[in-house]
Structures are given as structure tokens and as C-alpha cells.
Image (cartoon, rainbow, N blue to C red):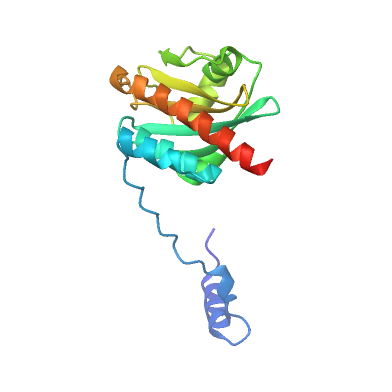
Length: 198
């Protein structure tokens, strides 16, 4: 509801008076969107993973490769009975959106299936509550199919990689083999990082 004309004049006058102007920290500059990193070819991704020395570099490498094949790609961290968004690239997948992904494991869904079986999944997404929550968190839109790959360290699933080709689209099966190879390389990179810590 707009203030009466007199009140509006008083507010405007106060805003210009010393001591009444809003503090500078309340006026936030518009955030610039970071440009998405360029996609990586498979051989480049393999080469980057060989010399990796930190966990975030592993995530950046696999996601940059994934963007050369998929519309959306996300890495989830599996810990204490839940899968939590860690990093992602693609349409509607800013850092804030990815951080809000949280899926409890132990309920029917494709992420839970991949964690339980330690095997990859490629196919249509069944309509379960967990899967609906995942797709909403990814910005909506049901793809024709999706690819999920477990990433292991010391014999257990520590990450799940999720990718799709966007609303109504099919994942190109041609990139699946390379991603499975990449998942094995990531597992070796994790093991190497763990060895350095010990």
C-alpha cells in the first residue's frame, strides 16, 4: 500500500538528510554471473585427473568433461545416509541451486539405487517422490532418460554423478563408456589423495 502523499514527501526528505540515508552495505551491487568454464575433451580430462592434488579440481574436471556431452551435470556427495549437492554445471544449475540438493537415501529413487548397487544407471526416471524432488532441485523438466554413475573411494560410494540431456531429450549413449572410464580414474585420484593424507 502506497504511503499518503505527505508521508511520502517526509520519507523522501529524510532519506536525503544526514544520518537518515540507508547505510552503504544495504545497497548491494548486482552480482556478476561467472562464465561457465569451457568443456573438456575426454583425453584432456584424463590428463587433468592424473596430476590432480585437490578434491575440488576433480569435480571441476569431471563436470567440464560432462558439459561436452550433456545439458545438465551434477556431482552429489554421499555421506551419513544422504546425497548432497556438491558441484554442477548446466542450465539453471548455479552454485546456490546445487547446494540446495539434499536427498535422503533409503527411499526408492535412482540415486539410492546407484548407491546401493554400486552400479551405473542409464534409463528413464521412474516417478518416485525422491526422483521428483531431484528433478525439481535441478530446475525442473523431465528428461527422456538420465545417466548416473557411482564414484568409489576405498570401496564405498562417495559421489554420484548425474547427467541428462534436458527436458524430453535422450542422453547420447556414446559418452557413457568414457564416463565410466573417467569414474574409475576419479576413484584412483581419490585413493591417491587419501594416501598423501595418511
